[in-house]
Structure formats: C-alpha cells, structure tokens
Length: 268
Image: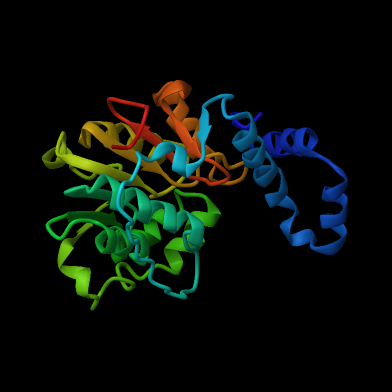
C-alpha cells in the first residue's frame, strides 16, 4: 500500500493496516498528528521485520567496526520551516565521519544545515557541492511542486545555516533546477550523494537517476523522506522504480535510505 500512487487511497490503506487503539487515543488527544501515525508505525514495523519491499537495518549494523573512538559534530540551528530531525542529522554525521568522503553532492540546499553537517564531519580536503533553486526560479516552481514543498521553498534562505561558519570554505553553492541542471561534470566523481530536493515523482526520479551517474564505485547515495505515506511518498516510488528493493537499505525508524554502489555489506 505504501507504493500506491493515489494519496487518499494510500493513506486510507495505511490507516487500515496500522490501525490500533492507540490511534483512537491520538485522535482524541492530538488530532493534528493523526496523519503521521501510519508512517511512524510502518517504519517501526520495518525495523522489526528487517526485510519487506526493501531492507531495513539499525545504523550500527551498517557501519564497519570502529577500533578508535570518534566524535561527530552537530550544530544547533533553530530555524523556521522544515528541518532534518536531530537523530537523522546525527546518522548523516556518523556516516560522513566513518566513510571519509572527499566529494559530496547534495541535491536540495534549503538553509544549508545538512551541507554544514557534512562539512563539519568530513575530511579537511572534502568538497561539498550543494544545489538549490535560484531566487527568481522559485515562484515558477511553486506551481509545479506539491504544497508542502511549496511552503519549504517560501521559507528557504539558501545557505544561511553555513554562511560565516569555519567550514564554509568546503562548501560550493550551485544554483539551478535539478530537472535541467547539467550534472555531467560530476559523473563518476562523487563519493556521497544526498538526495533531498523537490519530492514529487518527476523530480525524485530524475534526481535518483543523476545520483546513480554521479556516484563512484563503492560510493554511497542517501535519500531523505523515504518510507513516507504523505506528500513525500513519491520519493519511495521513484527509488524503487529505479533500483531493486534488495539494493536499498532503510536506516531503522528513519526516513533515510541508502544505496551502496558495489557492496551492500557495510559502509567501509
């Protein structure tokens, strides 16, 4: 049911499949959160079953054994609009610290919080390219994307979270619509691609295809907003229409999904 194209039908099926007495209690106590319930329950189910339409693993199962203690950096940055949940930001920092990428490409800058996160946890000589819409492109794009993305775009101040920070020199801000942007200079040259741009199907599919062209052998692609019933469900469908579920690993209880180009056994 998670892969059903029609949003209303998908959410109804999701509700029927995950319904339990706690749903009724939530409906009475905090009805504004009812729509989030099926997705959260489904992601908990995936963390327990470990394999359904795709693979699901705990973060520490995906990381290689670390012989020496390490430290990740997460900068608190309270901002209006959408933000990556703190535990997901921590997982992105940990993956970056362990894999030590030299080239990272992020599709979807927003305020630059994840770009800063990558910069703070990557090697000193790492370069992070991050792509976002030009200000004069945003108004036209609002009419093409879903309402939730439209609200995010309205609150977006590209790169505000990383500007003026010590690690800013590692970040290269790029501008353009990812549907028409020329990714070819980066083909085969990126250790880690983070896909978190517009979330409707056409863009999510195109971004996934371009990520596959950019990532090096043994490189990593990470998608945000995976395993989502709502407006961002197109990300899940786009990924699974492009790659086999046997090649996709969701980090347990999160909306992060990974593809390791040559090996699914670890992130080393």
